[in-house]
Length: 188
Image 1: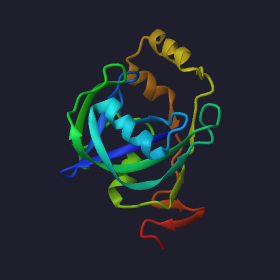
Image 2 (image 1 turned 90 degrees about the horizontal axis):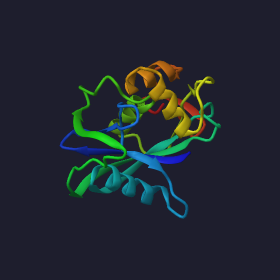
Image 3 (image 1 turned 30 degrees about the vertical axis):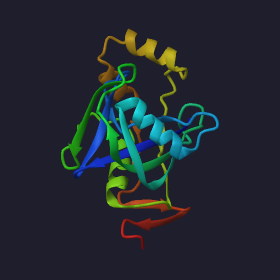
């Protein structure tokens, strides 16, 4: 997947969506379409998922998951501010949309989202590259349709299914990979 996430900030709060498929919270975002730039995809995804028009403020960084699915997972994270539209979730993708205080984020966040929210809120911009060592469970089907069928047959809530089957391996706290070099959160 080549994709985008967008951290939309308004009055000190961050906008999150609760996904329809697993009922977990995440930043708006999705795939980059053919002939579309990262920035165009970011603006389009926010408009489609939540009904807002946004202005991109900065590129936070690039995120990769070499252990995910078929190994192709690269994502650009932007920050943005709303400039128009009305909050209206896309019923095919989003169950709920809400702004959250950074100190009171929902517990059931999609994997990788907490770190991205922290990165966006910290003011980091442009030179961050983060390798997310998240392992796609080998016992789960990769095609989305088959994954959803496994979810539906599990007898669990979508959020329980998601939480129990996906895992994250934490990197050392406070370490950021910047253009291949490691530094602490102060940039040293």
